[in-house]
Image 1: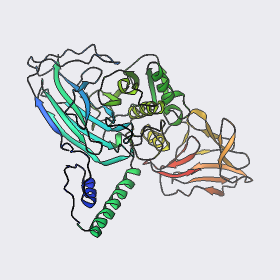
Image 2 (image 1 turned 180 degrees about the horizontal axis):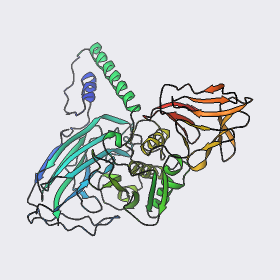
Image 3 (image 1 turned 90 degrees about the vertical axis):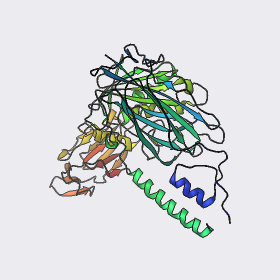
Amino acid sequence: MRMPKCNSRIGSVMLIIVLAAFGCKGDTPTAPTDPVTVSRCGLGPMPISTTGPPFCSTAAPQCPQTRPPEAQTLISLATCVFRRGEVGCEPVLMPGCPRASLAPIMTLVNPNRDAAHPCTAGGELQIVASATTDGGATIRWSAHEWDSVTCAVVGPEIASSTGIDGPCCEKVIDIYFPAGKFTARFAIRTDWQP
Amino acid sequence: MNLKYRMIVLAALFALTFAIGITQLSANNSLNDLGYNCALDDSAIAWYNGGTGEYADIYQGEAISDGDSWNNYTVLDLTQVGSSGSNDQVNSYDGYYGFTGWLGIADPFPQNSCVYGPAQVVYWNTQLNRSYLDSGSYSLTNKQHVACQELGHAFSLAHQYTPDTCMRDTGALDAPHPNAHDAQVLGCTYNPGASYILLHDQWLAPDQSVYSSGGYYRLLYQLDGNLVLYRVSDGQPVWASGTVGTTPGVVSMQSDGNFVIYDANSTPVWASNTAGKPRSYLMVQQGRVAIYSAGCAELWAKPQ
């Protein structure tokens, strides 16, 4: 019996084994599983979230001015998700002030929720960002994906890390959830204040 | 690939999955054990309900008022305060935060970093995103589950794999309460010095008792020699040692890990048979009594 040709790239080793055993029956082409990263620097002052509570009233971002060595680093986080068939989404700032370290844990929506994929949440994502002495940031993330039909955890933990080299920079990272066929996008941006 | 080979591969896969599942089931779901030293100072935590409308009620139930709330079901001793704060506190909010991709978020505020360092978190915020939750697609149970889960994170818990808890790693969002495993881990995280704990080398004399957190259950060493766990609300016994008729002596949580009833002649009349685990302790929980090792493993529990 010949294997049908797969048109999916699957990030989970287990999923690959299953597909190798039974053939691939993916209904749509899927996005790459490796994080897609976009970096840029030389940015102006970081925007401050206007949503709340909690509201931010104390941040005073100074980019693109040169950061003095003793300055406090500010890190902001913006997130969004987009589903299969969509090309992207515009990250929305997390409420509250930017600060020197972040470690939020998020319960993600299931953006493909419908009668056939009834689970209310799509996964969990934790992002840990900490300022470095040069005004940049280290970034780590880990995620669990939940099957959109059974709601059970599926696949291995998705985890990786990266960094931002200095102030007034932004890194946008896409994390693909292969079973649910959606992407979580987050943007980490650096700035500073006296 | 022939069919026989595929079946061998699948059998190996399922064996691997099962092995991983066993590992996960036995895993401690403390954020501290996962490398995040995010626990607040102790189990006495100030909590601010900044929720509005329906979400104020949801938070209130999950944190404080429900019988199986974090406050009533676990070692946590939440004190509700009237304003947000940053001193050993959890602040809970809801809002229209936009299409952020998250239903709920738990956000720690460390003095420096709560990653791979000493416990430095001074407060947490939890937020429920009404931009999604008010869309009509989410039931009250879903909303309660998310609130329960974000609060659980703020109390230092990660996801886990035992059933029937809002901390379970699942997208169903249908279990808006902690379970015994969560209670156990929190008991270990926040130093088991509370009144519902019988530490090693502690004991009960006849007619003495230990109450569960919130006073919902009572473990009483009766004058008739029986050790009985009662539900306080209606006085119904939930479990008994079956030693009625013995002359009461002492009930001892021994330093060797064994929980033993001795009669008045110092003769053991009943034991949990958990010796060999030094520094274990006994915890009176909601509807059960259990013994945990110093490393938080459950050694014995009644009713099962």
